[in-house]
Length: 69
Image 1 (cartoon, rainbow, N blue to C red):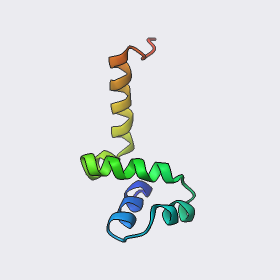
Image 2 (image 1 turned 90 degrees about the vertical axis):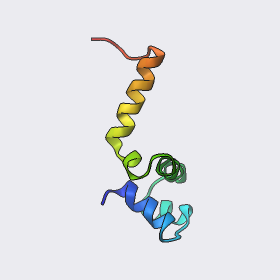
Image 3 (image 1 turned 120 degrees about the vertical axis):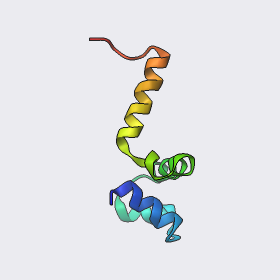
Image 4 (image 1 turned 30 degrees about the horizontal axis):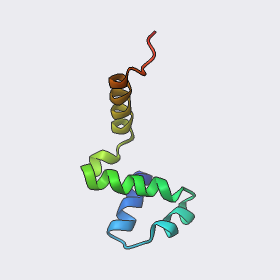
């Protein structure tokens, strides 16, 4: 299980606080809140890092920010 899924499950299913998880795993609370939002919006599939990169590339190209070459 990857860290993102573990953190989401520890909070949602295990009832651990975001602050506790952040301190225990050396991550920022804001990152865990982002993970939780992505999980709420799209389930476990939304936690996949490759999904995040693809989404940001699509958004960047829509705004005309993708460098060519």
